[in-house]
Image (tube, rainbow, N blue to C red; front, side, top):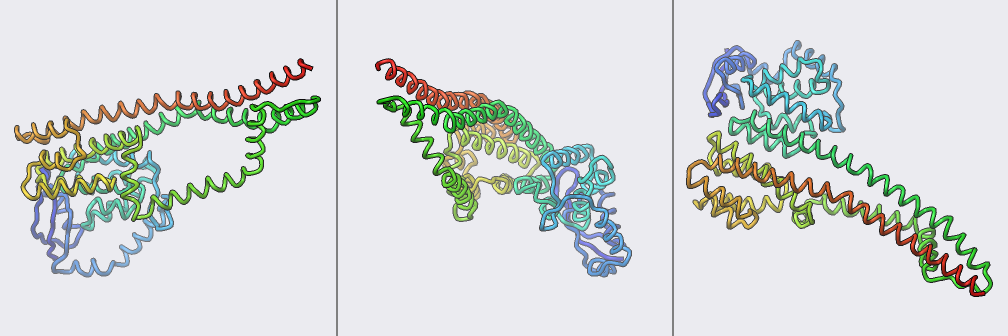
Length: 428
């Protein structure tokens, strides 16, 4: 028999620690499951289980090799599984539904592993389950299994584990991922018609530059005493410039794009770029609204499940990807840690709107801050949807106006040149 120390979450979200005696690690995990505990950490103290931990038996090694041999998932150069966005959404939905139904984390993953219709998600569930079974946390298992989940997903999973609200966090994350997927589909559909317009405009421009302008030039040149009008000179100059320098312009555009990407991806410039993104018209408003919704929902779930406000703020800060906002979150955490009220800390941070602060202040006074946070999250989720809808509605008019200006200007210059040429011929 072996003795293990454990740290686990009970069904009501409380952290339970202690020691148990079992024949080996799997048996210890079964004991915890029978007690209704979800293991977070399981460490061997004494007993024969050390041989299992330090050295796998031949049968376990063979089963491991067999399992790895049947893996069909796509992997990157680092050996991590690659998932499509739709697969991440499906995994999150399935797991959150099973956890809400009362299953513990490992049995839920085992159930997903045994389902034939999940495809490559079977491999993901298998690897995550093995890591969790051995006492690892779910959020770390996500990082070590696939990069497709991303830092935000893993941070929210860690917050859900800490608060005992993993099922709720996953449910909201699934909703967020589905919303993002639907938004991308809407943007794609909305850009199909503008894309055709752009392609048609480019085609018309090429015809102007390669066919119509040379013919107009030949016509004017063959006219005795013909004088090339100003409009034609502009078009001819633009045509000659693009024909001579198009390769250089293409290289400059590609080089500038690569240089900009390298600049914004550099660690020293990430804070500056995150600050710039918040100032971009329309886009900055969407980023801020998305942060408010994510921050408020995460904080409401954590506080509502009994986690202290300071710890909840730290976990919400870790789930924030924008470094500029994260800096302000650090100031909020410091002020709350020094004994300031939450609403006062939000005011001093300078990035939270008055309406949000007022709703938080009401929650503090009534003692129902989690409900106030959730109502604020719903309000800003509505604002976010309005901002996204506004951007979608602006895409088509902007493209139409730009194309109309470009094609209309070229056509106007061409027609003006033709009429002036006709007048010159008539005058003679």
